[in-house]
Image (tube, rainbow, N blue to C red; front, side):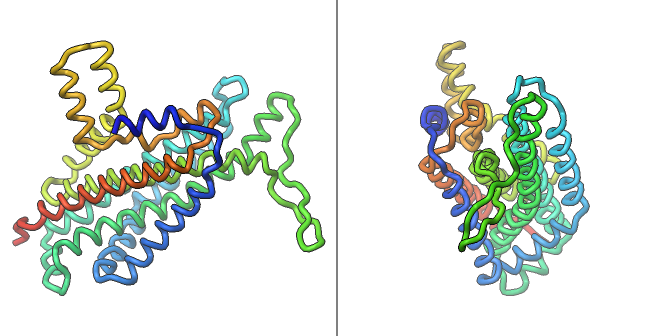
Length: 325
């Protein structure tokens, strides 16, 4: 997946992709709803989502993440007028980390605890097989993460909308108005200023990619939860999160700095087996003021879907012969 990471650096062009991001987001939302209410495994998914939203961790993550977004909005970063870019980066990182914590924690409490507490036996005694159980748990976790992302994304969008004028006022520059008059049906109505909307549209692909990254980590967490306890699950997923975001650098450094065949082989092996989570980051695009091309969103979607599918198939195999008695 180094090619995708390289593509992310070389193909960040000034092409608006927020429309495609909305289409992908709405498509995923409708797919999750159709699965939850149109399949037998959807019963497990809905129950898992309700369980995840009701637990205190969900509201704790929501409150802490919202507080971090508020602090980052008014905290001076001393970037010489580029504080809004730091706000976007910090906002995307906040959504990513909070979503990852919720996914891994829910997988541990919902799958591991049900297996250890013999609750899974009761569910599987009904007309629900083991594969439907795992798939329902995974989709339910994704829906819970989506419910966490929605309010946080709206809060981030509002503060970016506000931050643009706030920074302009702090630097004594001309402040972009909040709204401008737009003629519709023969009447002038206030409409959000295009410059402020443009600042928000730059992070929409990043939010979608952050959800893809959480989806991959959630699939790994579900597979681990079928065999290992929650503490081990948290540690392993955190390690994969760190290494997965460093795999392109590991391969590059092994070739250019260390220049050892064995180290290069190990780095390539790690980059092949573990997910290339760096491919779901748009920090390079935000740093250079470019937009993420729609083609890159499609590649990231296909990669995330393929890796998550392979991991869920592994979870099927791990759970197939798991003794629940």
